[in-house]
Structure formats: structure tokens, C-alpha cells
Image 1 (cartoon, helix red, strand yellow):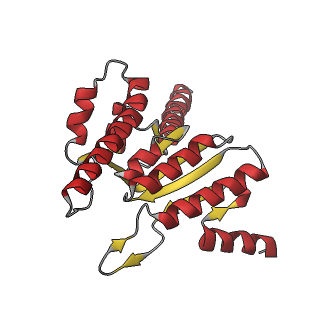
Image 2 (cartoon, rainbow, N blue to C red):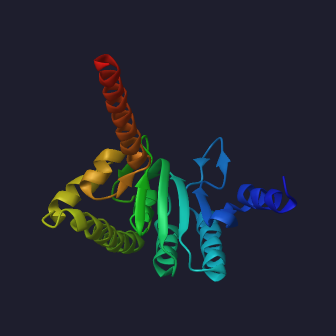
Length: 225
């Protein structure tokens, strides 16, 4: 293996960027026994923003983000979403595993949204930490309402691309409590564009079908001799 290849592989493992294919991996940066995965936090936002800036600087060719994201902080989520939207390169997000909460929101910012066959998406309204002072509680609640409206707009815009008559009330019912979606359900709702491998399976089945026809055709010819 060439030295350059080894360097590229090391960068992918250490910094989650593979320059030859313009690929970024977006997943939890840390894990602890008490807290579990870190999810969408400052480290994920920092890493993703830096990697997007690097690839956009190198060229305007398409970028792929492989994402396995359980969700997290809404402000760091917003930072990632804004960075994806400002990218001059076409961005595809490919979900493997899960796109939960903030992860589901990030998925909606991509130009192309792909999920693997067994990937899961989950959407819900965010939760905010408890506060002791009544004035602070009121301000936190107001800020929470603002973030909820932003979330609704983000989802509804993408859903309406596929279902123009989908209502805000229907979306609010989905967000009111955890709603889990398979890859197929995500595509049907309009929160994903396609399932990875779907086109290959169609081609593979077509090839098999054509192969069977050819075998039968040849058998009929031989039988008629």
C-alpha cells in the first residue's frame, strides 16, 4: 500500500475525512459509561464544519456525509445545518444506523438524503433542561417555542416537496412524541429520497430475470432440434 494511501486512511480514522472520495463521517466523538454516546455536540459540530470547509476549499465536487447520529444539542445541530446549506458543493447524507432527533434534522439539510435499508429515523420536539428561577423558566420556554417553530419549518418544507397538501397539524402530531420511521417510511413521508442499494437490487433482479429468459429460450431451441 502506498504511503499516501496510508495517510488518507489515517486521516479518515483520526479526523473523519477521506479526501480521495470527498467523504466525511459524522458520528459521536466520545462515549462514557455514565452518559453514553456524545451525539450532536460541540465536538461533532466543530469536526463537521472544519471538514466541510476543507473539502469546499479543495474543489466544488460533490461531498458525501456518512451519518450515524443519535441526536443532541439543537444549537450545535443548527451550526451543522447552516454549514451544509452554505456549501457550494452538492452534499449527500447517507444514514447508517440511526438519524435521531437532531440527527434527523441534519439529514433534511442535505441536497440528497439516502438511508440504508435498516436505518431508522426518529423525530420529536426537543426537551430543555430544568431551571429554578421563574423568569428564566419563562425565557427558556419562549426560546423552546422558537426552536420548535424552526424545526417544524425545516421538516414541513421537505415533506411538502413530496406531499404538497401535508399539513402543519399532521406534522405536529408526529413531533408531539417520539415517532420512529423505517427507511421506507421515511421515503414515503418525504424525509428521505431513496434507500441505498434499491437501484442495485432492481438491476440485479432484472439481470436474473433476463438470465432466466435466456436459459429458457436456449432450452426451447435445443429441445426443438
